[in-house]
Length: 306
Image 1 (tube, rainbow, N blue to C red):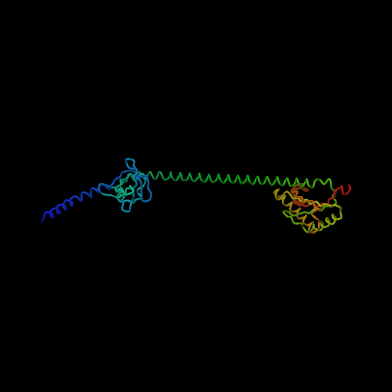
Image 2 (cartoon, helix red, strand yellow; image 1 turned 90 degrees about the horizontal axis):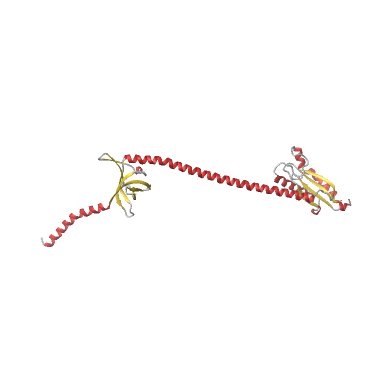
């Protein structure tokens, strides 16, 4: 055997002796152990606050063993669901590239698990109570908002109603002013047309009377025909104003279209609403008398010479 072969054999022997020492040193450098309390779980990771108050992120894998020592030589394998916040644990594993501890094993004692479970049992009802209180507060806020919206709507309706009343009052006052007290006119003929409740159509029984009145008016010099519509006080003021308007307009349309009275000889239909009731509205008969249109032939006293 030459010198070169002897040297090669010696080097191989040295390397064989050193290799286990190097590998064990690397493994020792990579192995990590942390003792502390679990303060959070999220998916496959949990956070552990170590004894020196540092927070370590622990990665749990399918290979991670969750163990509870029982006696000196026995260990009980448990599911990972036992790893609840508040549990004191000892984690062994190695650090990965993200500076997370990949757990090979997680060890805890049964007494610590019971303490953690008791803590959880106390925290869960408290959390539920807080959630219920928050839900109640949310419902109360919604109720308040609904009440405010309802109040605003009622105020809007009230304002609209007040505006309608004011407009109706103004219309009646204007009609009264337009028709006056007839101080300047002679009344030469009159027909009263009655209407059913909520009705505005001129019934056939009154049409001959209106035709006769129109015929009479045509024989009078510079005549005017005055039309005034009324309603009973049954229903709202706005509705009664509308009914009195439509009744007067329908009578006017009949005089124009069927009796050939030109609009130039008709005083604009007066919607008098519930003003000037001729009978008490406490009886059906009185209400019927108040649902009327009064049609009159007028002639200016100056033209008549009276």
